Amino acid sequence: MLESTIWVLLVGFGAGQLAKRLGAPGLIGMILVGILLGPEGLNRISTDMLANASELRQFAVMVILMRAGLGLDRDKLQQQGSVALRLGFLPAMCEAIAITVTAMVLFQFNWATGLLLGCIISAESPAVIVPAMLRLKNLGWGVGKGIADAILTGSALSDVFILLVFSLLINFLAQEQSNGLALLPLQVVMQIGVGALFGYGFARLFTLLLTQLLWLETQVQEVLVAACLALLLVVGNRFLPIYSGYLAVMAFGFFIIEFSPPLARRMRIGFNTLWVGAEIVLFVLMGASIQLQVLSKTFWPALLILVIGIVFGRTLGWALSTYRSNWNWKERLFLLPGNSAKATVQAAIGAVPLSLNLDGGDIILAVAALSILITAPFGAWAIPAFAPRLLTQDPIDPTKVTVNRKTILLAAVDTSELAVLVLTKTAEIARRCQAEVIVVHALQGEPTASTQTLETQISRLLLDVPHQFVMIAGTVSDVLLKSAQQYQADEIIMGKRGHRPWQQVFIGSVSRAVLATSTIPVMLVEPDRSTSKPIC
Image 1 (tube, one colour):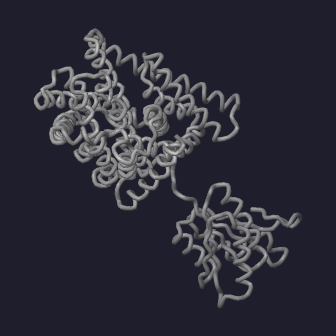
Image 2: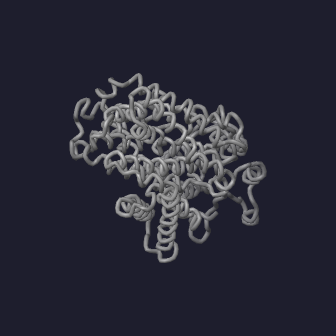
Image 3: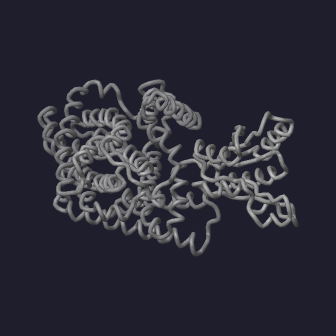
């Protein structure tokens, strides 16, 4: 088990990075590594890990859905509520019907088996869609109309609906019972309503523990407890199947934003970190579960089913979902790459019919595997590729997304003793906000011995801070302002000096010039005469 974990994490990570360097989505490399390491390849993944693959995938899906809930925008959902609701049912329903009819013709399935295949294939993948939509929100694509929020919510509702129909069909085919089909609308409403209620309750409990009782002390503890509560929602669905565990987890993250936005921001950072490892496990094990021998026998009919389901069935559902909305034709066209990826659900339930010895189970598994191999890489590539061409870029809301831009501090130093105070204060701020530092020295001639001393001080005081030292000839104020623009600095930190006692109450000429013309904040540092420490 330990050896398999090393193979999965280390080789999966390397393959993902290699795929990115080649211009492809990282998940392509991870899936290919899974095929290579799995039973169809080198067989380097232990049977114990493969047997527990579904449990590990549940953890990864939990992380995905928490990230989705923590990234939802209530205002945008209210604006696009009708569209999000229709996206939750119509595209998957139309695609499932189109696949059912096609499978009955190509594979001679009866209507129930054909619909079973349609349910498996029409489910949308949170593993591909959620990270891609959150990235679009970070960059501002389609934020103005809440397109990413509508797709995220619609995908969650869609999977609730599809998984319900799937469970009823499995029960019907395995035990010849059809009583549940008549109660499907009531079950859908109950699953959604109770799931949202459970998510609300868990979010209220979690924020109470942190904001009022103060039970948790560090961000790591907060993320650990939140992950355990989210997993409890997923696992609890097995023992109390009256709610959707997936929807409850997403609601859990969403209501955390409503109760405590600062806590939600910390949670976004923590779950983004968890996703780094969960993503590798999810896609490598997904690749290891694909059976290439079965896939080769039904490749062309399966490909035709996918094309008909997406191009005809799902496109009709998209048109109906966005009818009379404020989406233009480009934004509607974006649903083709943005809302058609398949991976997680197909990997989780694609083999269930075969395990129950249902007729056509091997064909269903092959079509599910092909849908992963084709649509998951296509969706991961097409979403960021087509978003700039089809969506408008709007200002982002930093309260709903994690902004990953590095903070850059520009420290202005000379060769006087004041440079040590400036560097000390800069290092203190940089460690606090994980910033990079650009140290700028304006040369008034050739470098001297004091310049070498300055370099030594910089290396010592900024030893554990990413930094760069540049020397530029010119007047101090011009050098600082141009350097701040060139390096896109967020703040300038410089020394303040007075040569006579009566001048100590005034700002020096260089500081005054920078303050008057700088478009970013400027911090002035001077020594405290009583303690010789920097004050700002």
